[in-house]
Image (cartoon, rainbow, N blue to C red):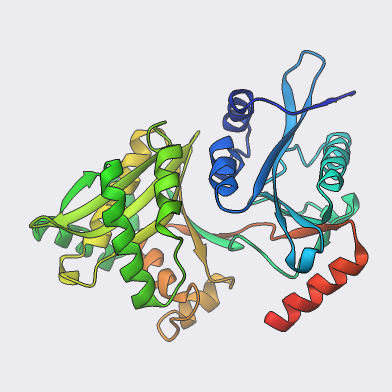
Length: 342
């Protein structure tokens, strides 16, 4: 099939992404706008059929590499192609190549996502990357059942803590734009307590502005006696939802507000048609290793795995990260730097 390469409008692109079998939040135009506000440049590249409809595409993000060594091109959870259609994949790859080279990209990194077992990315010129951007493994909760069934799949401790948040009078509300300041304070407290990096306050403000008014996200806060104790930002697209950001206070932790807002996030997502709730990153280890070691480890994503494992979901691993090299020398330096940092 002969395809035409186009730069679609945001509206046309988002309609394509939402209808695609591999739809993902990180391929939406709003996500591109969010990243553009914080050092990236976003470009949408699409293949259209003879009738003008989009058949495949990718939102590619660009940012400078250190020392002025060109740019990194990055397609999170993309490209959106039919990986069983060799002609389509080759046409999409060629279109991305041309765009990436216009931006002086030294390499393209793709992270295609889940459900691609058996796909051989090397046949299209990719090589397994030494570095991922998104966590390779995630924790998915099935929301397609009724609430009683979803609760029954959780472990006893998680169900008990959800009930505690209710019994201890944690009030759940959908936050307004003004409430983002409170969420930022919770994020700062959580980052300091658990020793992980958080975004600058303006990042969560921008995320709210881009997604919440459009019905694509919600800021959910749990409070007691007028004090916010926990919060989550949950996002939805098509029949999927993502828990991307969460935080809790150092105060009144016995009220289990973090469990109350997480359960509220799942219910919000389900009400919008989500059948899968992605809790995103867990350590990149098989389930046996995760279960054998979660009690003794708290580094990296191990601490959050202790929390996530109780929600009755399934650990899945995506295809990982794959690189397409445009400048071999710069790529060799990149691999050397990654190896030294690791």
